[in-house]
Amino acid sequence: MQLGLDERKKEIAIKEARLRELMLSLGLKGIFLKKQSNYSWFTAGGVNAVVTSTEIGFSSLLITEKEKFCIASKIEAQRNMEEEGLEELGFSLLSYEWYEGDELQCVEKVLPRGVIGSDVLVDGMRFVGDEIKRLRYPLTDSEMRRYLWLGERTSEAIETVLQEVKPGDTEAEITGELARLLWKHRIDQVGFQAAADDRVYKYRHPIPTEQKVEKYLMLNVMSRKWGLHITVTRLLSFGGVPKTLRKQYEDNVFIECSMIAMTKPGEIAGNVLMRARELYEKLGYGDEWRLHHQGGAMGYEVRDYICDARCTEVVLENQCFCWNPSISGTKSEDGFIVLRNGFVFLTKPVLFPTLRLEVDGIEFLRPNILEK
Image (tube, rainbow, N blue to C red; front, side, top):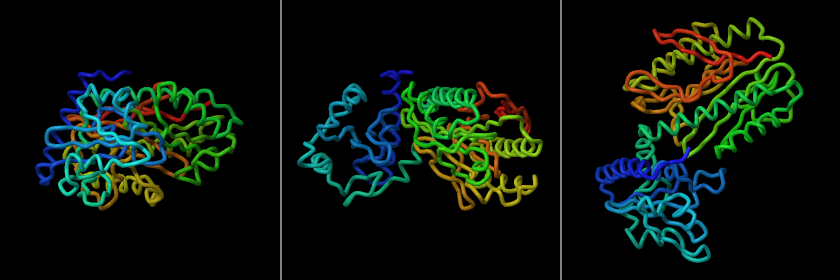
């Protein structure tokens, strides 16, 4: 999927307006963006990441009352302006030699630090990272189209891999094959979880190991393209699913669907967590919710915020969420976008068997455990 120039220009214009309204409200003359997430957001899908092990990008943006700049060393400058399309998108370049000077010297040629807000801590600038993050929450139409494409590719990749898994395959081999399928579409993998057999029951964050699968596997991927993140989990069982495990999984899915049904514009996100806690207790799983967070808002970060008992964030129209309720041995997790009237799933079953259920008058078609 290629991003059109006109579409990106329209999207950036929306985001310029959001930033400049923020600047006006805070009495600022400029905004300095250094994080990978905010670079991708503001440039409508651009990438300033060179390594994935840091949230800070290798180039920066400066948005003023009337202009927008890309600030980069000469190592990064040409690629940013050409391959990320910043020249065509109306950005001016401020560059410096990697062996002398720095980006802040470039910034000060435009504005003094004291009138600039920044998404990272910079001496002399005002930190406005939280305010900028909230500007990202409501997705534009073009962002939603990209997100749906990403969700479809990620769903297809994880379910394709699990169709081919055999007893004796290692968690590492399985995640490696998933990475290969995603990279065909230049989709980043920012995290994997894979748990074979006893590890599914023991750990909530099972990073992949060389353990071999015998009877049961949980596989999760956190993928990213254009800065947008998706998380999805699927389960595989060899030799049939025991009745107790099947019942537990169906209860787990019911909790997730109940959370999704409640996630509507204007709802307090913390209330969704409270409902989940009540359902865990009602269904006989007591304190299982305490063993792992239940998810939250998603977008240009894996979780824009994780919902806890203190969460007072309000659910917004066109905001992305991903709830991930889990019970020792099972988990249910797919991303979705909240709409004015309802929601749309980003990841969903495409090759997996399905489970149909109704919650609060809403019909859900969810992935079941794959039996082989």
